[in-house]
Image 1 (cartoon, rainbow, N blue to C red):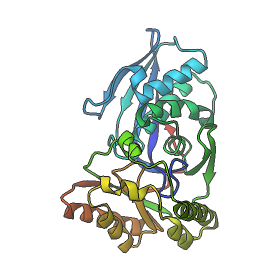
Image 2: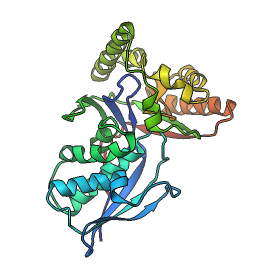
Image 3: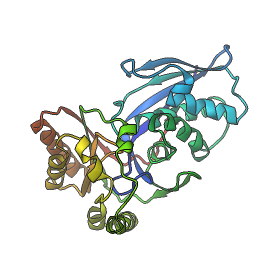
Length: 308
């Protein structure tokens, strides 16, 4: 017998909030099963749905590192535990796949050992695992996947994390094109300097987006969901991006941008009907560029990771 945990996909950045905001989806997501073993130490015994791309070595796997750092923290590094990882979302999609595995693993191990620790207390270990894939310690995917909702990370180093209000009816269309964009590569192209005018506009957009969420002001949310800094630098990595974005906006989306480091593109919408229309329009735009894609429609997941 073991403990099975589902951790949802997430949209990092949400366009305007590079490395400081994230949103949890209902589906897709990853599952991890943790069970006790008579063999000392942590082992990964099964990985499915990864096409042979993920390592079984604990120190090279995001789920393995997250669980191991947690076990070290509680003084149980020698405890015999086996992890089975079920990848049920695309790798390298910009939907927080590595974060979901790390979140599911550390929560499953915590529940297996009945530590009584809260999801927030487990965040540092999930972030340590996700860092293996992204190359940096940030929680814009890990935090929403773990605790759900739309999340603001005021400070990544101290994990000063805050849930934001989610207006009723808000819905997301995510289109994952069959393109490869590696997180490390997408971060490497970013310029360290930001023009003052862009910084001012981006700051105003971040503030406007948050105020719009708390006031339920759909119009303000839409006006604020404009990425002045990161999107222009990464758009070239995604074939047909601006045509896809235009298609979503024409279909009525509040805003459209790159999910995490890409290649997935998300459209935030006022309701599920608009989200469906926007998602289909985005797919058609990708198809016109000869790119096949997969669509995910979801409300904002308010629960985060859950024991199944």
